[in-house]
Amino acid sequence: MRRGAHRRDGRRRRPRAVKFLAGSVVRSVWRKARKAVLDEHEYSSPVGKRVYDLRHTCLTTWLNNGVPPAQVAAWAGNSVSVLLATYTRCITGQLTELQGRIEEPQRLPAVPAAVKGPSENFGKFSGKPAAESRSKPASAGLAPSPPGAVPAPPKPSRRVR
Image (tube, rainbow, N blue to C red; front, side):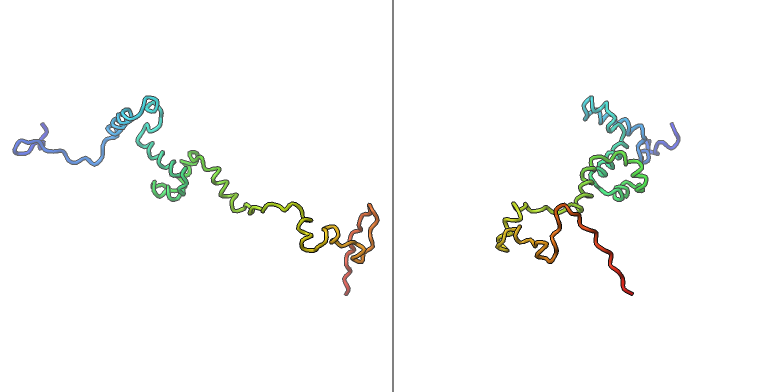
């Protein structure tokens, strides 16, 4: 027996408190726990194969649920650049929502239902049908143009010095 392993009264000394479990112990317990709670198909899948996979699942879930990457990085103890380099390909299901957030401020307000025709309301206010209320070229002091004539372009104005 190792020297100092027993007390003077013959009892064995208790080992010092262990702060961390060995990785092999954690993996063994994790494997047994997965086998106990998952059906055969889930157990054989890679989901949750390692304890560390839970971290990835958690971070991916936060990002997919819209938590800002800066906040997720702070909670995970990573920088935003490391977080996005690792998890960008895992972020899914937000495209429709993001497109809606981009389009919504640019959306025009709804147009009220169109009135059946401009002439229906026109007579209520002027007392004349719409065609009669329009000014004719002759009444505006202009000579009527012959049918099929193309109007001349306006002349440039001359500057007087």
